[in-house]
Amino acid sequence: MKTDTEIEPYVLNKVTKEECTGGVAAIRDALYVLNGKWKLPLIFTLSEGPKRFKDIQRSLGDITPKILSKELKELELNEFVIRNVYSTTPVTVTYQITPYSRSLDKVLLELKHWGTNHRQRIVTSRKASN
Amino acid sequence: MKTDTEIEPYVLNKVTKEECTGGVAAIRDALYVLNGKWKLPLIFTLSEGPKRFKDIQRSLGDITPKILSKELKELELNEFVIRNVYSTTPVTVTYQITPYSRSLDKVLLELKHWGTNHRQRIVTSRKASN
DNA sequence: CCGTATCCGTCATGATACTG
DNA sequence: CAGTATCATGACGGATACGG
Image (cartoon, rainbow over all chains, first blue to last red; front, top):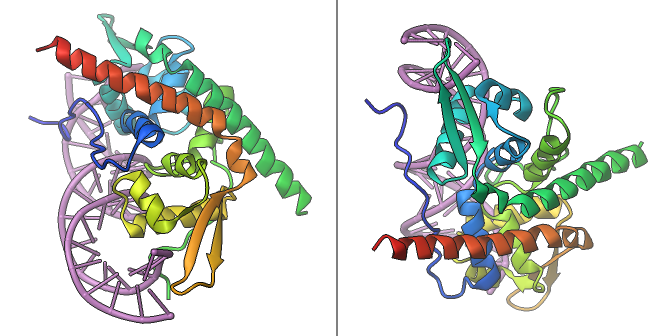
């Protein structure tokens, strides 16, 4: 009765080579749990407050329910997200971030700044070439 | 005569839905150029100074030459990295980051901090469960 | 040393349809 | 609404060999 594939909790990246040291290892550890296109946008959007499945989908733009479901399960398993179920009809489910997700605030803030500036850079360099 | 697949320069993520606003769009723009396991570690390791192909491979731990080659090309195309060829025998090639890559310094710093703390958290929680 | 070529496998992501 | 089932594609990677 497995739905798609079992999801194992992330532990740590196996960065065994001694040459892979200090900073690189730390960054690879971070990306190991925050892999893929969606985890950081997801944590960011939930940092604005708890949201329902459909609302998350809308706020991310174009994620499919299958991927969103998988990403949320991974984040839950790694203690970034909590799932709340309310026995309404139909059932209501909300997702909220854990305090641990808050430790990513600075990362997300810097990334947001960079993304904003990057978009601006692309747009203006386009105009310049017209 | 294509080698593997053609690499197109990134421009901008198509985040069309109006609902996908502000912060989420910016973060998705950022991840759109910095996608995958290797780009941030790569830029980070090159931020320590220009390095040769083999040295980059060693510092990242376990990337294969095929993938490293592809990632470097993408970063070159998007103006994060410059490739320098020296006519020695055998030929020497170094890679260095552009000034634009420096705009990622804060992101990389925060990510490095977070990765370091995250590893610590995992390790100590392991000990606690013994 | 600096890569590229080829074969081949696995995993991530996605489009679409569907269920409770 | 909150997801799951099915099918498909492309990214990513391992192994190995080879060329400038």
